[in-house]
Image (cartoon, rainbow, N blue to C red; front, side, top):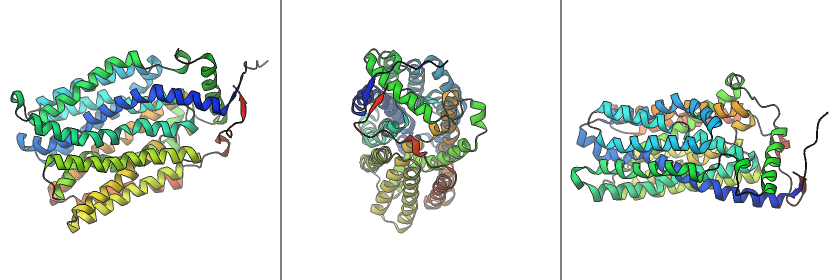
Length: 449
């Protein structure tokens, strides 16, 4: 005989207050960790401006090294997320941040291409699991209808890191060159790597693994969280729970290919944005830094706006597709502007692309929990992210090879834009609409919890 759970009564307003409190507690640290992950991942784009000349490397060498990061990412993301499910987020973030922080500092010692390749691979291997781990972590705390905005907030770390990191990188490089015998790009790696080590050590003291362990929540608040998560689970009973079944699912592979196409555009902006601005005629590193900061401000605005609109309308499919289309359109316009020699056109087009491409990513991550839960979700999110992020390897290497062969970036930009447009078609043709029953209760309506 089935035993009915003990119930209390809570209103939607009460639960809104509880989840707002949770967001303020867990999101700032997660966002800060992700900011420094992005700083350490993409500061190589600014280091490139002087590093290549100092070491005598070509764009092709840089593209291969920038991209090999994602092979380490690919190999270790699924094991990392499965480990997180067992040992919790605090210990996982400790391991991840310590590892990539140390490797980031060691990047300052590169003298040969193989040094660059090995350290970038190790950086990816250590960082593997951070992004899908934080996505999984949020599913322990927030139901789907509250998650897009939360994912947008913590994922806004990427445009924030690039928005603040671009002028910061320029400042570090222009103020430290020659200090203690190190070049500007070496100081960039050292100064931006140390904070990651500190954040890793703080993780075990700041983070709480799951709501049931949150002493900073009252029992009533923990019950409210459990109620909404249980309600979501009941509405999504058709989801896969076993990883093997999820691996055979067409939906999972459509999601992988979709994100691969989106990341192709995003990696282009992250790793070649400063070079595209330089090619447009801006040669001062400080000026390039501030221009890139403005471009990624639009990326941050796109993330926050699209996440808010998605949560408000309880719709993620069209919001992901429309934003990806905007991102691809921006790359096409950037290619035309470069061919026309229009520096303002290049800047405006890259800002449009950043708003669309970055705006699509957090909303995309509200899609996988519609098809998976439990172990399938833990491993599936990591699988989606790890395979899709291989685009971060191919895109910079491809664009670097095209630039080396032709002397210009526009042919590569046209092709990468076409790849991102494929994401739009995949979403609209193969990803199912949200089920109507996932709509949340109207404000003020009482519910048992």
